[in-house]
Amino acid sequence: MSWDSDKTIGGATVSGSEWNTMVGVINSKISTIFPITLTIPSTHGSYYGSIGTFTSGESTILGDVLYYKSDGKLWKTDADAVATSKGMLLMSIGTTTSSASASYLYSGLIANSSWAFAVGDTLYLSTSSGLLQSSVVTGSSDVVRIAGYALSSSVVYFNPDDTYVELT
Image 1 (cartoon, rainbow, N blue to C red):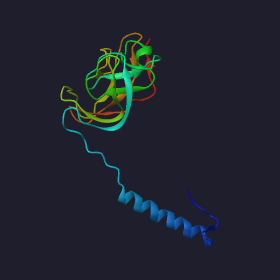
Image 2 (image 1 turned 180 degrees about the vertical axis):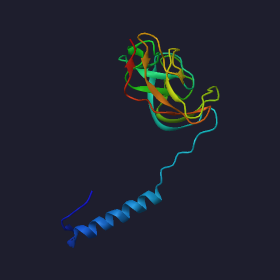
Image 3 (image 1 turned 135 degrees about the vertical axis):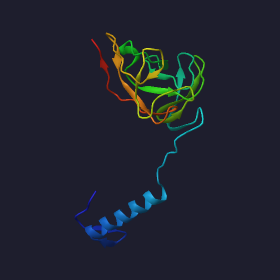
Image 4 (image 1 turned 120 degrees about the vertical axis):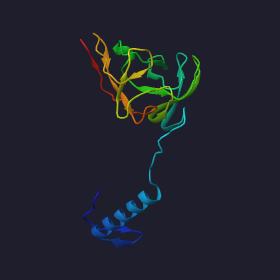
């Protein structure tokens, strides 16, 4: 934001250009003092990102992709149907039993040694319950939805796109 007019602060008048200079210096100092950097996780089960607490509708394991259903619980996605592929998606960051409250990843980086993706793969919802895959589904009524990207064979940037396409 840029200010053209003078500002009065504590009885002192500061010109618009002086104010803009001060704001620029403050912003520069803040980004130097508080840089945001994420370390790519390398240990199985480690993650960095936005986390929320929800109740699971079924048992889950690390890396399962889940959708938030109208019953207020998380259920495994399945690209075979729009109902199990749309809406808010989250990822399991551990093992959870049915009806248990646990933390889930909204978006961020997560490591899972059972994955075997190629670096740079775009990852889609799978027709296998709760899984990601690197190829686009092709069946009639399947749902294509991007859920993230592979940073290495076992590290995913989980960042689900809000859009999806139902194939006909």
